[in-house]
Image 1: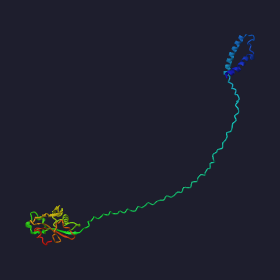
Image 2 (image 1 turned 180 degrees about the vertical axis):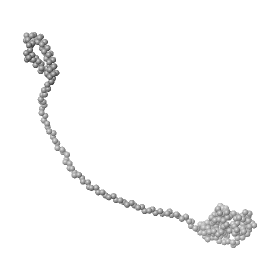
Image 3 (image 1 turned 60 degrees about the vertical axis):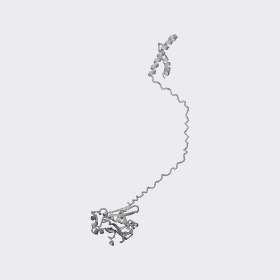
Image 4 (image 1 turned 45 degrees about the vertical axis):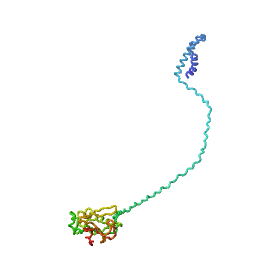
Length: 274
């Protein structure tokens, strides 16, 4: 822009002395060197003046060339109609008013009172009574033979000679006279209930012979064979007679009357006592 201003102002400055009628203008007869110097000094002055003028003179606005751009034809955009199928707007669903169902109150079930059934106490098992016989134990023959009795045996002889009075004893089929005697002695005390019998019943001592599978009664109530003479000992009778078999060989029958008696003379002294 500065160069343009210098180009415009420089001719004007050169013409300025002519226009103002300066007296010291260069004569036309001056030589070329003078003219060159003057021109050089004039150019310098003009350049300085141009610079000053450029500094002090506002820069003229640049010439704006009219736009030579070809007019642009604006093509309106082609509006493509939407191909979307028409949307059928369903009418808003009308919600049916909520029906409030009244809560059904279930009446509380009244539990029936628990009936406490008392525990049934089973009656004690009762042994079905079997057939019954009777058992008697006596030693009254000793009362007539006290002079033969061994020392120390008198306390075991009852006053009336009856050790075990007539006692009913149940039995099972097949049991023997020895079986019912043993059961009677184990479960009963003597008639006088002496101190010797209270804890364990009437004392009974016997031996068993395996070869013959027989039992032999040796002593009852602490009275043994030969305690009252050489021919003394225990015998048994059934219904008033003496069986011809050992005590463990006789099978008891219902209603039998069995007597165990102590004899001092091989049974001759007991006669019809029983």
